Image (cartoon, rainbow, N blue to C red; front, top):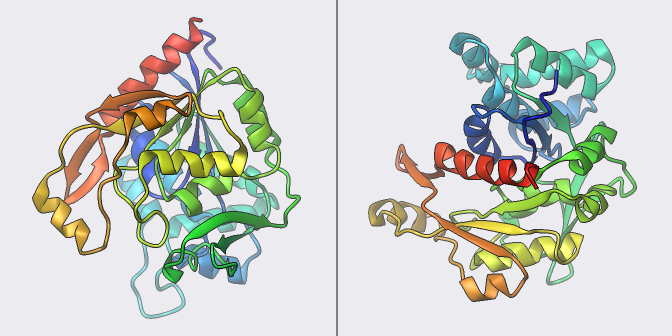
Length: 323
């Protein structure tokens, strides 16, 4: 049962950044909906999509695991990846479970709901669409790259992304959740292959433009080779605006503290550097800029601090609900 005294929070995204954010948010008294991309075509997900015509399950699986309230052993089983030298090699058990449930129910939305119930997830997990889609990128040299996993490895500058089928409609619950929200969070993640594939679906951009919710973009901390080399925080926001229209974001959260130089050296080997920001340039886009210390270091990796970020977002959502 929905508690009317809880702010309604919608998180859009995919990839590795979204689950990090959700692990913190699930501990707050919020009415949570997550809108998840299904454009992935690499690894286990890609193999399943070649054999079974279903929306990509990989990002959905990770969100279920992040929001699960099941015991740790069941979560570990769900996330287990087979390393045997046979047809199961590389597959995640969770992907297979979602594919099996899709086969049993005949509907991917229903399959996600059923698996979510098994894992007692917090809130609603909404695949952006109920069909298999293909992501494409038009590069600045005019070439077209097809397939989510192919886009970053071409090492070309991306002009825009688009999806086929081009007239595909979003999950109706997605549009309702956006219109009904107090806060919409565009999560960190791969800009062109995890974040924008949600936003460009027909009907989603219109819903974001007309909602009364506060729309917050959590900026990436590091640039990504093949997608956002040289990008500042402003460049990320402008890329979103090019795809869905100006003034669709109200606030942007950026990291404002120095980053450990030893760890940065590891990222430099992958040609990844911190996402910088120019406060005045960001504000010129009619944005409120929230400058916070929002990272943590884990296994020599730079990640958003899920607890700090969740607290910031909850405070924004609660304030918005009280207006």
